[in-house]
Length: 112
Image (cartoon, rainbow, N blue to C red):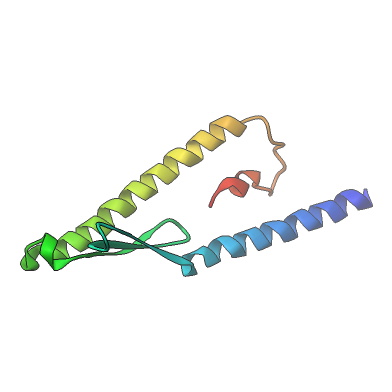
């Protein structure tokens, strides 16, 4: 029985570390560019688009800021939707495969 309690304690500790790491993903950023740098995008570790920069030569200057903001909003909406669909797919794939231990959400192990 003691070994089971020790194992449960270790699982809780790992869950805490995983949760902290997931929360810290917002601070990790990466940038990508296309068209020899004419369009640049910046994302965080939670797969959220932070910003889009579009070169002046590609758009009317009066529309540039609105296009950049709308692009960020549209991509993030798509990312949220695909995240919901991916979680549902993972739930279907693991339904019944993992033990149902009260108070322990093993499904979150697959969330990023």
